[in-house]
Image (cartoon, rainbow, N blue to C red; front, side, top):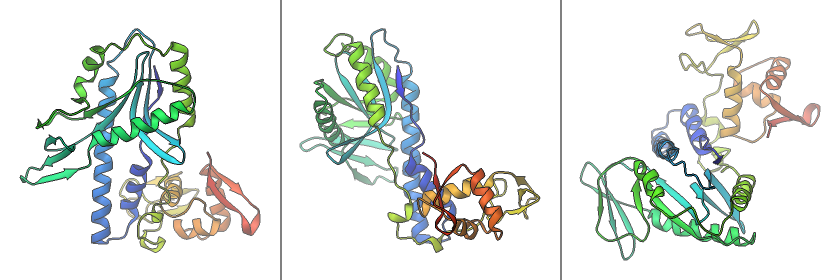
Length: 316
């Protein structure tokens, strides 16, 4: 049973807004594009893994959670996917790599060989799993739960894999996941159906989404570096005009009733976790204060304060 599905990662949403709103700056745009491409590839790989994992339908009690972000002693650790069975808890570390992948041991090292022939060292997913297994064991132990934990590296797409040494954790392709799991003795163990449900429910309840917002906190960018205005989703122009109770594009003549909602989200993703009427007018290029007030209300935001001290935040 799936207790937690996978949503689009916040860093992917933030990087998409950052690239879309950022004024032309070759250095910044290149860095943003590189990170965005990595985030997209990672998410696409995880979605591909999810598709194959759905083929795993055992008769015994189990729980599946995707993209779990937990806190132990002030340290956050994220797990791409978790399978809880009577015998063990399996953490999946999903990677979406392009090119030949070479694994070398003592110490564990991964090298990605690009199409140019260049070898690019990368962080070991086995080391990443070691860290996550440790913190999950401690997180469960704090709740009086003892369970055998193991990790599996999953390669989202089939590419050439060269093992120069035997890895201490399994490395498999996404399409192999169902058969791999069926081959394991998972149906008998210390975790009862009720305990599995309890662990999965507690994980879901304790999960907290990774929050990179606002993006200017981690990027050397100021609000002045962003394009202002409401964006037309048809021709991508920034500068739709509010007229006759709707947003009108002066370029392609398309119209919309709610294009300002994406604009407010961009503000929260990029600039601040709250917005005033004045800030919204400046960012969306609106002059009328009462129009801005109605639009902010229609965007589903939550009002705090009164009059000059009032501001809006996203509803939780």
